[in-house]
Image (cartoon, rainbow, N blue to C red; front, side):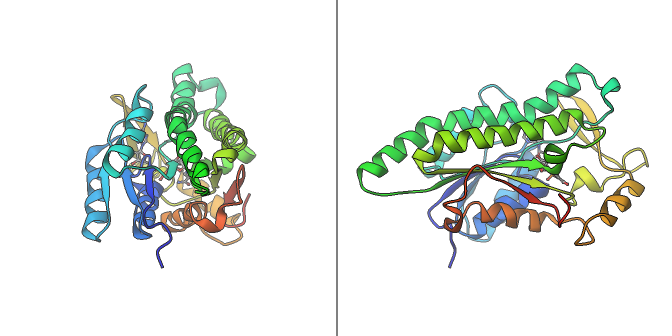
Length: 276
Ligand SMILES: NC(=O)c1ccc[n+]([C@@H]2O[C@H](COP(=O)([O-])OP(=O)(O)OC[C@H]3O[C@@H](n4cnc5c(N)ncnc54)[C@H](O)[C@@H]3O)[C@@H](O)[C@H]2O)c1
């Protein structure tokens, strides 16, 4: 029995990688999904895939860092599907360097995409969540809604070369814990899922070795990826013996979206194959 029938989800950065699998998983379990990505083409292709499988989805493209994006994202769910039950803050990228070589631009860009953008998206949903909870309580109902903020083990343990990303992913965990306390009364579960190594273009590309991926952020090409030898060393330290797949990552997010997790809130679930 599909557990998310009648629910509406918004998933940022869901044109590729983990976000894509989250959108497909939530849709596969019955949710209508608003698919966001910086890039229109992959977002449209995820929507097409969901619709072809008999699900419901629309795009809301653009950067999560745009000042009005939160309002637009939440507004799309309400306009297209008439409600909002699940918010997954997933969009993001890495822009690594040791601290002495890290520019203000590099620091601010990563804080903006991983912390400020989720903050604005969640703030845009606040009135709707509060008013819905009030009318549901008046009707004697308890309806749970879900926020899943995507974090990283870098935000839990720290990671050399990622001062900006580690700080940002730790900050999103702080936002998660604060909002769990503010929104408990509205029956909104707010949790973080902190991934270890998940095999996507962020981690599979081999930076500096000829076939690395780049992300175009406001006209600037930013290299992502992990050196091949470093990747082998990381995998050797994972008790399960390998990096996770995007499908496995999406499975953990799904757990935070179903009724069985209704009493779980303010938590950081580490999904790292046994490596914290
Ligand atoms: N892959 C990993 O090992 C790993 C580990 C820990 C955390 N994460 C986190 O998981 C999330 C997804 O990463 P992924 O590995 O799937 O990367 P990915 O590059 O495969 O996918 C990320 C998607 O987000 C989009 N995106 C980037 N910036 C955006 C913006 N400003 N607005 C809208 N969309 C934007 C990209 O276009 C891309 O389609 C990120 O928050 C990342 O930090 C990944």
